[in-house]
Image (tube, rainbow, N blue to C red; front, top):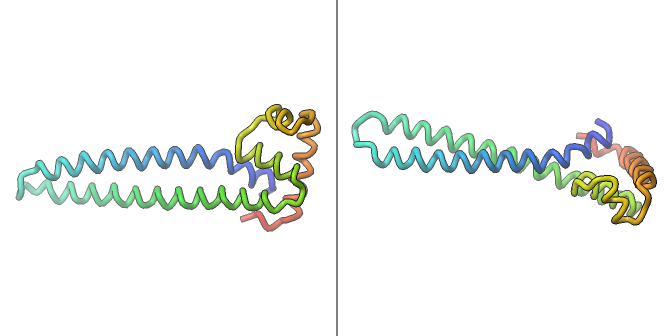
Length: 138
């Protein structure tokens, strides 16, 4: 995996985490409905076991999604940490702005008061510096 491929994971992580959180909320809503059905079901109807099974499946999926979220958050923290290890402050600023904050080249250039071409050159140098660290690859 190249440094750029590694860093390109960061912007997608926010989207994936948001989708996972939405799944958790839907599962919680479903669990509430199942629990309501379970409490309204007459005892001895045989339906209770099925509702418990569904509730257990929902709980297991929710736990799996939470583990995924933890892994994604850890990966994003790792990316942030690796960028922070770069010696050049401009390299860190460009990589954080681009990959962690999702800024465009124009936004980064305006914030740093540089020409866009200069920012893309800094970006290239920053990627090379990250490549030299070589231990960022998982």
